[in-house]
Image (cartoon, rainbow, N blue to C red):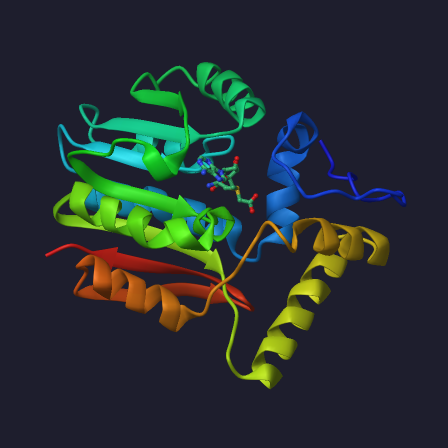
Length: 240
Ligand code: GEK
């Protein structure tokens, strides 16, 4: 279904939430809004075929409709277990319908919970695909540390985010290019500006250096950007 949530003027915008209206149009919304989303999801499948360990757990934290969980399930050893965790029941009920319609995916469990206090163990892959940006700043350090502690040696974290940039000229250029990307994907000026206003208190981007510092402080010795497009990108971090 096509995302036209912000296509008519709204007197009261309110903060953006992951409700039933968003769940219904989510695949269209995220592909037309996040540059590189489909490439990143596909690459998570490729990473899973290489780095998912037998009898380990794979986590899709903030799984929405389970796109990454499904890619992981299709590519991981059949005795690995995939957990998709999200705090939106609307997202999870749609994810459950999608996963039920894909018969070879019995090794996915969907969990309704807050990823900042969900137990994680025995993990070979953890995915935070455009999710840390929605977590309160004060809770981000602990979440990354919990992920580090849960990963097995050689385990991989995929951290995809919207970034901000210290250089105002670059920040401005990439921000505007992102809006050009949305226009090219059919969003109107009204849709772009209403979505921006609704999401600005909810999605708090950080710089790539802030992410690198947090990863280092959590214990990771190896991390780097592996994909980027405009002000969006993905970092991979590997535990020794
Ligand atoms: C994808 N990863 O398709 N606990 C659990 N879930 C949360 C929390 C929280 N504290 N905060 C936000 N979420 C997906 C896309 S969307 C990104 C992720 C976007 C969930 C929220 O309910 C939503 O489903 C998801 O994180 C963010 O690869 O819409 O830009």
